[in-house]
Image 1 (spheres, one colour):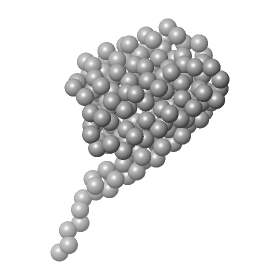
Image 2 (image 1 turned 120 degrees about the vertical axis):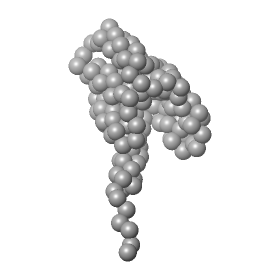
Image 3 (image 1 turned 45 degrees about the vertical axis):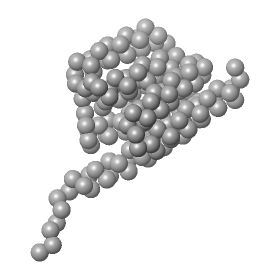
Length: 169
């Protein structure tokens, strides 16, 4: 497959992610996130980043599971799965980036909420962005820049809402 088609696949995944962030339906959002992760999984695998592709494949199903289940038990199941897959297919230090990013997002999905969850997702996004730069995924870079921007805005809004309201007297 030509590099142009592989890069186009990354832009398609980015477009799906934008659709996911713009929908008001939680179920539709999670379904689109799963589709985006699956598309990025194929994209990164075709770019030769197998560990990134495998972690994104697992991440796609994790998004659905997180709708119904939370807590440390489910977290540890996915941690073991992703560590085992990442270790088995490990070939270079850059393979650590998607593995660590997936573990951070796993924590965010199953163990965190509110501001902590958003901060964990921001850390995850920044790690994925570094991976996208190293691998050469243009769609991945744009996707992670978009996600980081949206997460920073959301973190700012949450922090602003947490400040005690000064009452007019």
